[in-house]
Length: 403
Image (spheres, rainbow, N blue to C red):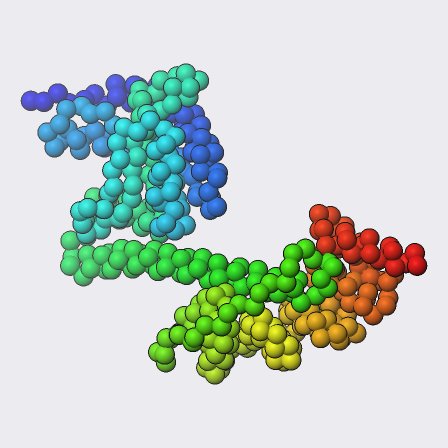
């Protein structure tokens, strides 16, 4: 008959190191958090130590299967919970570079288990400095689990329903329900990742569009306030966009922004117009009119740009950016009193705009109101002291006021 482990002896040995394990896990959690600090997203770090009942149950399970008294490797664990699938590999790479790895296991990655979940388990050596500080804990390894939020949610529920339960579901409809929930969570993870990727792509196109728009503003305004030569107009390219009438608004917007950033302004405005023909909700219309106004401005179609910005404001009169954009176009067309009014409306909504103060000061300058121009210029510099154009403008205003 195989030797049966004495529970009391095991408990005494287990509990003799319990406090050390808690301290080691706490310090490991901090170290992992520091390791992942450079990431743009910050995963949730959860530390835990196995209790004796769970430990003893696992020992008996291994002995029952024919093994010898084992070394349990998950007495100490840290769970890293990430928002998106894309974060998992980045987190794993940082951790494997920081710690001495013993083993990497990808559960549910190569094999299918009906109620299983995907999860990466890293077995690491406890760093020597942590062991020296807190002492040995009857094991020299710890487990780090890396999961998404949804994988973690499923793992917690599955642990209660399947792993810890005395009876696992054996009724076919119940098994199907659990499998369906698992599949739904996996699909949700994939969809969330697709949305995240789309958002990043869309935000990238928006950033490029804003940069080109502001560059056009600089070129269209007073040359003495800006360094560099006037930029060459972007060459027009043939319209080449998808003709699918079933394209979603998101798809068409991404295509429009891509065309806009590529200097294909006719293509961009056509796509913006096509979106508007679908009669989307007011907030979307306001956004599209704003972008189409920018595209018209880029082509020096100033009246069309003003019309589009005005339509955008009819649908969203709280958009300080659109008031600012329309004010810029009015400045370019020498309608300085109207431009000042738009800049002022923009600043009423959001007074913390150094660039808007700068542009309004410029409009005051062209209107001959040098004191107000100087006041706006100084307010702009107070928020953005490194603005070289504003510094030059301030020098110019001082010269004008001394005349």
